[in-house]
Length: 263
Image 1: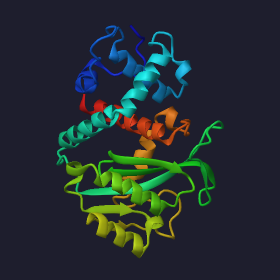
Image 2 (image 1 turned 90 degrees about the horizontal axis):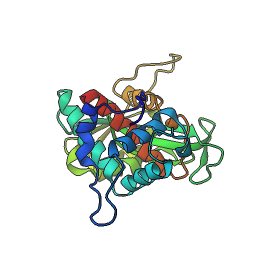
Image 3 (image 1 turned 60 degrees about the horizontal axis):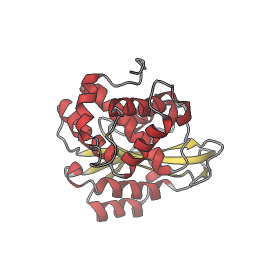
C-alpha cells in the first residue's frame, strides 16, 4: 500500500479508467502487481518531475513501472483512454462529443542537458530545445499533440498536427474552424488546410498598441492549456530522450485533468 501522494487517483477516478488497461497475458506467471499502484507511480513521476529511479520505495520497482509505461505507449493504451475521457468530459460539460471549433498554437521549451535527439533552436523565442504543437477544442481539451525540434516552422508543424487531428475520424466529424495566431498567416497555408480537410482557418491578431497579457478571442484557450501542463513538473522542460515520450506525458497530464473533472 502506498502513501497518499497528491498525484494519486481516488478510487472513484480509478474506476473510470480501470477497464481500459490491457488484461495480463495468458500463460506464464500471474500478475502480482496492482495496476492501480503502477498508474499512481507514473502520475507521481509526471507531477513531481522525478526520474524513474527516483520513485519512492513504496511504489513498485521503477523498472516495472517504466516497463508498463512504455508498453502502454507503444500499444496505444494511453491514447485510447485519453480519447474516451475526452468525449465523456465534453458531454459532462453540456457539449457535443465532437467539437465544431479548435485552436492551434505551439510552445517552445528547453530540453534537459543530456537530450540530443530532435533538438533545435527557435530563433524567434531564442530557445534551444523542442516545440510542442498543440491542438485543442474551445474547452481547452487536447485533441492531438506533436513534439518536434524547436527549429521546425510553425506552419509546417501545424500541418502535421492537423493531419493527426483529421486522422481521429469521428472524433472531429463536426469540426469546421481552426483558430490561430498571426504566426500562421499565409494564403498558401490557409488554402492547404481548406483543400486537405475542408476546415476554415481564422487568424486572431494581437493589438499592437497593447502590452502584456491580452485576452484574444477563442485562441486564448491554447495558452490556458499550456498553463495546465505547467502544473506537472515533468513538463516544465523536455526531459525525454524521444519526442514521442514527451507526447505521451502530455496525454497523461490531460487524462489526469479530465478524470479529476469527471470524478
